[in-house]
Length: 145
Length: 143
Image (cartoon, rainbow over all chains, first blue to last red):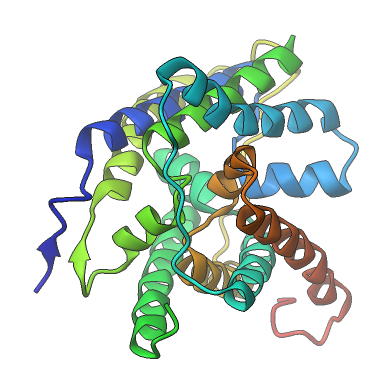
């Protein structure tokens, strides 16, 4: 039985953050004609000279996000990791490897793909969400988080 | 002009991730952990984003040209292959292990936390290690 975590659940900020992300995806699409899939943008910045500056600037903008947020609202940005150093390294490698092989991540498949009604992306999103949930469950069961 | 808009889109994306606390891995784990007390916030982020994107992608589908580029580059592959399935599963394992996907990981670099820097370096190693699967034709992922 699923119980909702009332203390940490933040529907309003989550939903408005989502709206901002949607606006960003559309702005990027209307101006550059490209899909804002972040794993692909990072990948192309590293390995591809086509649209290099545009990709690089998008990533700079992404890093500026929390800085501008903290500056405007004068708020601390919460950050905590529930796992150990070796698992951070393994997790990072798996995220890089998986998004490259599967051609997308939460933004490319999850947001852009679902919005375009791409069956590939809907399937990909279901797979990575379910696998991630199972992984969290297993690591918790093993006592690693 | 598309450079300025790329920067601006990245900035708005980063603001959205920060506002919704997706830059905090523990928050994402709270969503993925359905056996404890469940925090559905991430679902609201996706709903918000899709509500904006869906109608506009739909309206733009018959337009032939973006504002500052020669054409729209929309993925044309529709085949469900092993790469998509295995890749997504591998990504899911990594996402569930840490609570970071590529966007929030890059954004959180702003916090100068050594853990997010370590994660991003590992992610880049992961990108490059995928080359193994491109060069060996015998790989089950090649099909």
